[in-house]
Image (cartoon, rainbow, N blue to C red; front, side, top):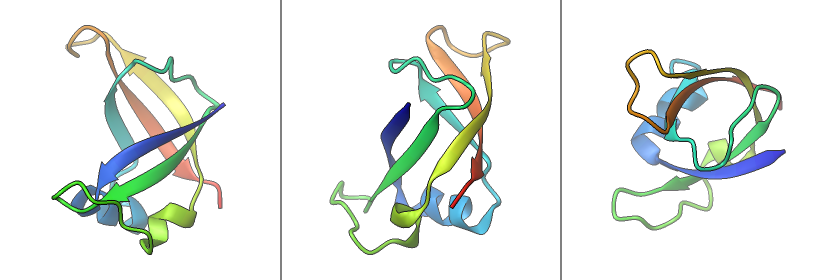
Length: 83
């Protein structure tokens, strides 16, 4: 399954650089290891950035963690670039 999720441009820069290899999200989509992520990058005002390099990349979920001090209904998942 491929999930399209929104991310602010300040966080998108860290993902592009490879410094941010995880996401903390409400698990309203049933994220699972092996699923894929496509990001929609937003300016701080909420407007979509159409030319951000992250928009062309595909990420795979490599690990999903729930519980362990996370708020109920939230997960942390690891990501790796596959394109």
